[in-house]
Structures are given as structure tokens and as C-alpha cells.
Image 1 (spheres, rainbow, N blue to C red):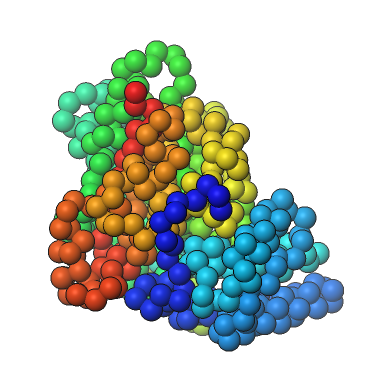
Image 2 (image 1 turned 30 degrees about the horizontal axis):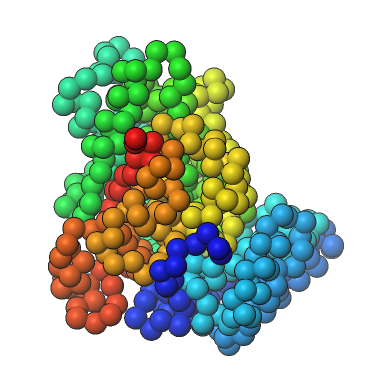
Length: 474
């Protein structure tokens, strides 16, 4: 806490913020979904001890939901053997035994998922169970049109890059911009926010047509600066490693898009190594875990088996999806082979770290996880995906919207030795780096918050920022 910004933080007691809505409306829905998921799985558990543990976990999740809805005091995390327990509990003590409806939003939301994780970690039969896995796969299934569209374009692009060197000029810059913005809008499907999406809703959020319409909604766009950094490193490079790190956000379609970006950067020689940073525990419903890579590769290895089978999630196991064409299946199989090869060659690396599920902001990174910080400093560019990573970068503080992004990220800013690129579709109040008058303009749009205190335009994912800070600059 000593490393954090002194700017006030968003709090669940603030009636004008999305924190207030989240604590009272969103989190109980998420817990209800988790209870239903464990109950559903437990119905098929034959082992008596495992079944009893499942019932206990359901009861504890229900108790957690009751505590939340009745504004009880946040209780200390039970020791489950992980090193972060002391940090969470020390912060609780410093906050003075806060209640759910009067606590810093960022910490409370992290605490919620960390508390849920403990219930599984202390069990014997459910230790590695991801209570959100079923939702992730279901949403990826619903993303089929965008998945197929992007697979076709990626297959064609990689084959062209293998034959023609596109390393200069306007064409490469435009291609990089398209890839980066595709990666940005892949974040539109966030299961912790969009808890009741239909198949049609998901399709509207994805695909080239949706991205083209949304282009005007990128209110700050530093993609060109990021491109110049990677292009410049390639021109200087020689045989030295040129690494790009991606701190991941959501699984499913967004992870798929992140892998598309990674594969493109490697194939275009804008990077020699990509390091992907997933979470270590089920987190914010849809965040990437190491097992999610295996799941997505499993889909691509057998696309017909996944996309042509009835999911049963809607209760209708007789409803069969449209079969994939041979070309569609071929494109998806190409992705499986290409990404698997990159992983085997050590060019695509998965590197989890418990720091990403700590309860505080990334302002604490240099002081509390110095080895990770030094490792990230050796990267050409560190890309932070999504809203939560952005909130952690800027401390989830109540910044004036015109505060420079480089200032809002504190110790990760100028002089840090680390280059940061944030790709964020806005789903929370905090924001920095906007041009003067932009916040006021967006508040004046329909549903944007008007003259009141609420910055509602930043809640829906309609608007986005791509913000860069060169912490390596002299």
C-alpha cells in the first residue's frame, strides 16, 4: 500500500461509480453462476468424498454470497499454502476491517476471486477445478463466425509472409494497426461484465464489420508509437532477441485473437519471442489460465468435433450446428499446427506469475516482485490487455481524465526501463491521458453520464484507449 498513488481510489460506497453497481448487482450474479456450475458438476461426481466436498464448496460459495449481499466485514483469507495470503490479510488489516459496500473497489474485486479460489485449493478432489471453464468454452463456441473469419485471414496472411517480405512502408504499418486493433476489440467479450449474452449478442461484438464500426470509438490511439518501437528494434536487431510480452486478459475469443497477434508479430519479424502471461487461479470469470491454452488448441486440433457437436448448454442436445466446410476446418487446423510449432520452437512462451492475482495495483511491481519487473524491463514492449490490467496500471484511482498516462502509471512510467502499451476497452470509471474536453464530450453522449458525477460512458466497453509509454526513453 505504501507504493500506491496518493490519489483517492474508487470505492464500492460511491453511488456514482460502477464500483457501486458491481458490488450490489454484478458480483452476486457471478457467485450464483459459480454455485450453479459446481452443483451441476457435482451431480456427476461418483466418488463419495468428492461429492461431499462439492456440496461443501457450494455451501461456502452461498455463504460468501450472503456475506456480500448483507454487507458483512471482509474476513481474512484462510491459509491455503500460497504466498499471497499474508499480503491480502495485511491489506485487510490496514483497511480497518472494511465491509463489502465500503471498500476500495479494486482490492474488493480481487479479494472476491481470491476467496473463491481458497475454497477449491483447500479441497482434495476439486483443487484444480476452474469454476468458469464451462462459460469460457461456451462463449468461444458462440464466437464461431468471428473465429472462422479471422482464421481464414490469418492463414492467408502467414502464407504470404512466408513468401514475400513485408518489412517496410505503409503496407506493414497498416497491417500492424489492423492486427493491434483486432486484438483491442477482442476484449469486448468479458464474461465478468456480460453475464447474460445471447449467441447473437456475442456475434455483434466480433468480426471485421463490428471492428470497422468501432474504429471511431478509439479515443486515444498510440498504435503508431508501438509500431515504430518494434520496427526500430528490428532494424537495429541483428541476431539479438527481440521479445514482446503480453499480459493477458480474457480466455476464449480474446485469447484466440491474442495468439493471432503473437503469430503475426513472429511471422513478420517484429519480434523473435512472445511471452504470454496468464493468471494462476480462476480470475474475474474469463481471465486466461494455463489450461485455457490447452483447451483452445484442443478445439483447433479437432474443429469439427467442437463446432459441429451440440453443446447441451441450452438444454437442447438434439440441435446440431451447421457443419464446417472443409476449407474452414483446414484454416483452423493450420492455426493449431502453426501455434504448436511456435510453442515447440520456444518462440511462444507461457509464463504465469502469482503477482498478477495480487490484490493491489501494478504500482507495486518494482518493490514487491522485483524479479518479474526486471524480466519485463528486458522486453522490447509489454502489452497489457483489457480493463482490469488498465485499472491496475493506473491504480484504479480517481484521476482527472487529462492526467498524462505516463504519470498515471507511476513507477512503470518514464525512467522505469519498461515500455508499456495498454489495449483497453473501457469498462470502469478510471481513465487517464484523454485530450482536454474529451471526457466532457463523452459524458454528453446518450447514456454517457450527463452533468452528473457518473462517468457512465466508460462502463460499457463501447469506447477504447490504446496508450503507450516509453519507459526506456532517455
